[in-house]
Image 1 (cartoon, one colour):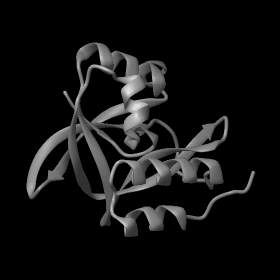
Image 2 (tube, rainbow, N blue to C red; image 1 turned 120 degrees about the vertical axis):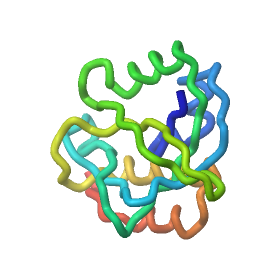
Image 3 (cartoon, one colour; image 1 turned 180 degrees about the vertical axis):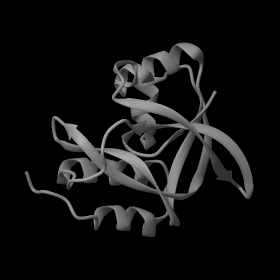
Length: 145
């Protein structure tokens, strides 16, 4: 099963712990989507994806084993219904492939914490995202608390 990570799971070291038997296949882009925030996590709104024809999201792609998929569901609270899995088209070196992502089962809205935004930007940087993409993440509005 091909999984597309777009937030903290972009960080290869996080995925090595969370899904140790699932190799990284590479990186790609989700065109027509943007990173959004919603719901209410312990540190404020949680990352999710929202459709946006003028945007794209950098992703790291992993071939997940069934056991690692179960583990990741637990990490992401998908087994509790917080997130659901959605299959999307990912552009990988000019080719389209289908991969699944986690999408929040809650409303969009609210400012994420500076910690959450920084974690996503650091994770994108460690995954090899282009500098301008990482810079745009770091410039996102966020709450200080």
